[in-house]
Image 1 (cartoon, rainbow, N blue to C red):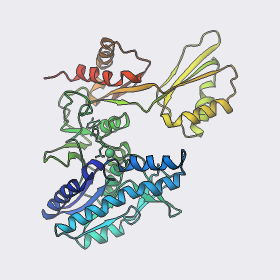
Image 2 (cartoon, rainbow, N blue to C red; image 1 turned 90 degrees about the horizontal axis):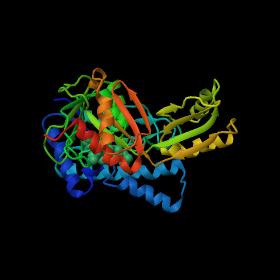
Image 3 (cartoon, rainbow, N blue to C red; image 1 turned 90 degrees about the vertical axis):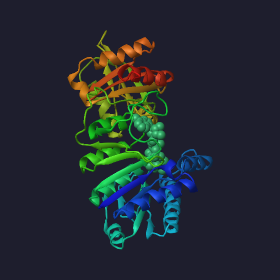
Image 4 (cartoon, protein in one colour; image 1 turned 60 degrees about the vertical axis):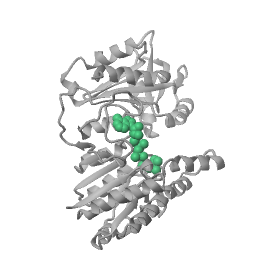
Length: 402
Ligand code: ADP
Ligand code: ASP
Ligand code: MG
């Protein structure tokens, strides 16, 4: 008995049958004596379809109008789910993000939650209503609608669980937990019983789509225990928490990220301050940098290579072409790359992890372009066309079929 937040992703509410299925899960939870707040995403591929519609009108639509458009997807879902719950004879109310108190920063398309004014949520709960909230959206200081970025409904759910001090936050999706790799793409991917916030954060940031990385960051910060589970099967899912049972696993997962661009600046002077001047300019324009590699100086020159996300390519080009002081330098941007990573807190104390990963890639004849490591992950940059083959080979090396 307590307060439970349940989030249902797009595939879980894709059609009338699925909406009715969700209504059943929610009302079963309510019948057990719990207060329930539900966060839903837009149905099926609605968000992608709305983006395609916008692009039919404009190649570069205004960010404000884009958010106005995208918020409509979740509005459809909350109304339909509330109707389905009413049909089952339960008290229910649907709320848009702003009605549920979501105040965000002003940046359209990638707004951050600043504060949730919980008055309305508390009030509806005190009236014994099941509350259905539109995920992925809020309102900014100009009273404009904003969205939180793709996959943002996970973050909406965790944020509500944090402010309302919920006992549980359940993320229902179309797979029954977090796996050692994408179970739809990788043979023999294994379901994890539990995983730490830090490992899940790395997996999510490095390409495992199952949870949005900001939702994991927030869950860690406010100590919200998450469960990732399927809305279609009645099985226990994966628990994301501070301390996980390591099950003697060195590596917890293998991911791929294809939203990567490799930027190579060649023929730079081999003198102090060059890296600073370049990265300072990039930082000023909010360009996030990931792997950085600098060559050894030769004949007074050096090369600097780094990776960033594809949406930053135009900005990088502009910075380097327009405000660049090194006339002799040459720039090359390559988006035909992918980042493959292995993640696991156990690797810190096991020196063989990197060589095992590199061996698997070597045996598949895949060339490594760049490498980066932290205490709990190893990432390599490879050619994009080899991404799936690389994930399978690396996964097989760490998780041989039983
Ligand atoms: P939702 O619409 O419910 O938010 P998403 O499509 O965002 O669902 O996320 C679920 C998908 O994430 C799964 O269908 C699966 O293909 C993918 N996925 C990628 N990596 C993993 C992983 N390591 N474990 C589980 N699912 C993963
Ligand atoms: N509907 C939004 C998206 O497709 C938000 C979400 O599903 O979490 O990205
Ligand atoms: Mg999602």
